[in-house]
Image (tube, rainbow, N blue to C red; front, side):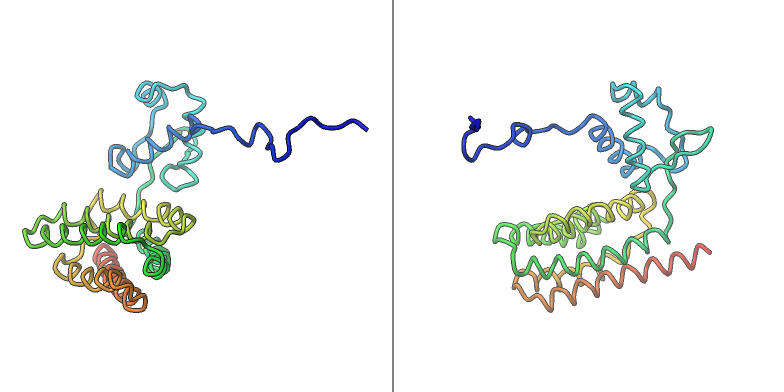
Length: 232
């Protein structure tokens, strides 16, 4: 019987390789960021030639990136027009916020249990900076930090699957904020709500942190509903 010369405990060669991001994923990442930041406005047609020159790539990986963006709801592939940037609506934001509320409620509970001191210190620091912006009525800076705090809470959950799901859904809300500021509520009201759930998180009081966060997101939801009614 022929004996294998493979060393005990060895792994297949392919499993040890470290793969870089594929070109289409790198293009998708760049394009995603630009769409969310408003570089490409809703309804605009993306010309392949322009993007190929902009990114220094060929059409094949660019088209594959378009497919990724289409699945994420950021692009729509239309007959005779090609890739068109989608137009987000307040109703879209409301639906995504329902999912975000579930994800962040779980995240803050997990963060109370699993966050390390460094993560909590970062959240406290962000909240303090946001308070300063609120007092100086620096609205844009205030809401930038608002979003950062929510992301930091999710990261502090220690659950990578939850983080990925939240990032996917939250980018649609962030995009609408960048385009129109439609989700901005009263900063003083928002700040008071943040003080409640952040304070509870710092004390690792899961029940109070979850209740405070859910109350805050409920307030945001009401703002969206009001604006939907006003736009009809």
